[in-house]
Length: 420
Figure 1 (cartoon, rainbow, N blue to C red):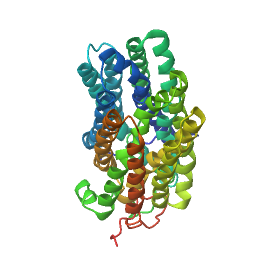
Figure 2: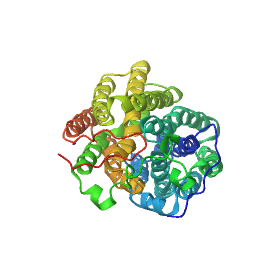
Figure 3: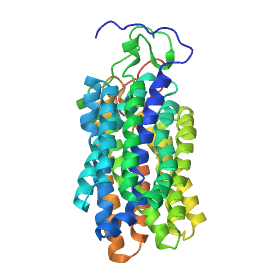
Figure 4: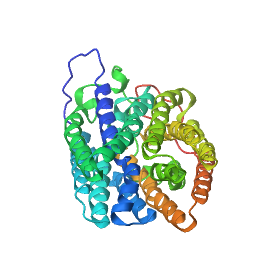
């Protein structure tokens, strides 16, 4: 590794700029992706499509932006996280604009599914992976702050999209959202830096640790064969079958129960508010309580919140569901990369997180689409909601079987002791 070039002293630790860049990437990428629920009715009407076939658009994109971490993670370890974030924002913006030009649903699959899927897939894992390297003591908080861009994006973007659709139409709305995402994404991705040691720094801005206390952590092959990885992968896979059902179907569910389109779009805003609160609060608390036990609590919290959806028919009941679900969902998203760093550590973390997120990709591909087709057959969301509750409870049970990692000095990467 080349000799690091020391960074001039600064009052603000440069890692927080990296967090800011990651926040921007997640805000723009996921925020624009989660506007999809506001477009469902328009796409169904214009293309005379079923809810299941329209839901597949989002599922394809979701599958790609989690599955591609297995590619973008290693590329980020090699080329740098900033480069991958820039490529991702380019794909996302162009994909959204091409979706606005689509002449049929197949072209929406290609433009939105591939464009947004590739865009978020190339940018998300590299951005959050970079954040993990810059922090140790405050990793849970920093990771939560970075991915809170997802929550803030979910708060603001769907209602904005709904207003744009009412005033401009869905095509012009996609064009405008895509253009804004493209320009801001390319500029703000420049804040991301790959590794503090490349700049003569150490996590949290701490002084150099004693010799022998810092490890590069596990190789990718070693990590993915470990019991911790396999169980964490299984928990993420099972939970994700229900995890993204609300992001596609909550707004159509509200419309089915007589709630107007503008108010229905605000329900995703409630998810965004809760998600942002969960990332800030629970990411920080997990640093004190233990990230593993906190993640288990997130799965149980999502299961309990889905019970609220099951029995809600009006705006306020669904708003309560959106907020509570968002809190626990936000904690889940904040903790997965931080926990992976706890378990496996080191310079290969983007690659490891990328493999781990393929579990979420499979669930995202199947869950929302299956929920749409079940609705087409039964005209009810009862079965998808009950199935989502069951998957989260099972994921929590799996978390109890993962060997705990012992605590380590603040400036070092995790101690990778034998699993018991």
